[in-house]
Image 1 (cartoon, rainbow, N blue to C red):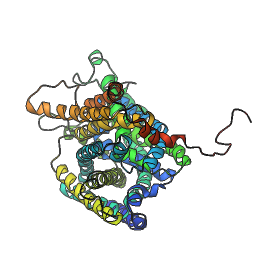
Image 2: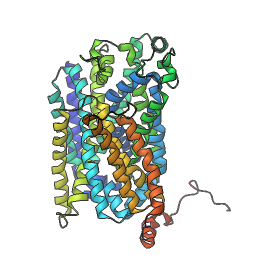
Image 3: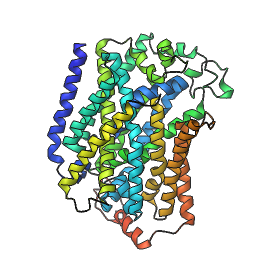
Length: 521
């Protein structure tokens, strides 16, 4: 216990120290929110990765989907790495940095307002972001509390309050730069921690091959497996698992979803140079392979730890208890490392979410209405006030959350990415995307998520396949079809305005020969 407490004290001291150190970079809006658009490649890559993965992945998703899909859940982690990280950086990193700098857009709603020449779109996008980031934030507390209860026997409410206060302190002090530096430190902890935990858990099962053999002996539940696979042996140790279609839905939601999340895309706004794009793509992909791939790989062995502690009184699975149950046999020191690991993952994501939400509310709603003449210093002060407000609101929700972390995550990602992904992505590449198509997509993304959240609660029978995860995936993929389709039949944007917006891509720059070879020399 002494070692675990010492680890936490050192961790807390470092986080607050970084916040104090970063105060000098947080004196104006650009510095507080974007680190002056001069954040290096490693900090940016780790900020992206640590904002991506949190207790939601380690506790909630790894437990639930590892239980349902077995070792095939590792595909989710690989999808996160190569679609959610590598492809996102390659397709969006450079273009996002160039266009947002050209438009002087500091947030995703700000981008929508300036790219599509509509303050109404900007305000609406800000409202969607603010509302649906809250359940995501609440899910972080819930995952962390389970582990704290295991390691310290601390009541849930104190876990929530402690994490909220610590995160608020360093984000308010140092803004984005404090978040980025702490994300780097937290990312290193996460990398070492997940490798140690996987090795210890597999060793407890007699090694990798022994664990695989035990898993292969378990037959899939009829309620989980796809119809043709219900009676097949060894499904939980197979390549695609017992339900490949549902597995694909999770991969789409958790991988493609990052392309439309404000707190993720915002990392590209602060990229410093071309080198940062290339290094960031490689580093963030490697980070995702280890962290996300490792979490889902670990969760895939969850059924080997089946016992009454992970089953509720009514017979329902307590998915959020699966991974903590896997850790109960670990030495105390390693449990302390796991606690710091999950705390790191959760706080890095929480800091990113509260910074995104407070800046969105301040810059994209209040600045356009009642704070038009407010100077930079007062604007930063208001953003700090809203960081406190946002954290307090998420704490209130976290104290009375839904049953499973995955539900909270699915609602948030579905609405946000379903609304924002398509108009943001297409808006970076095409002048033909219309304002009307963005409105339609906002209605689609929010509408389908809210509808399938409410329908089961008013007595409407919804097929089990239309759960928050799959509905979120449908919202995203549907948006990629809706936006270009609606743009074909709605009024085009002003040509002169679009030429001015896209002029940033035509600017000539000089590069060294090692970067480019001419056709003829």
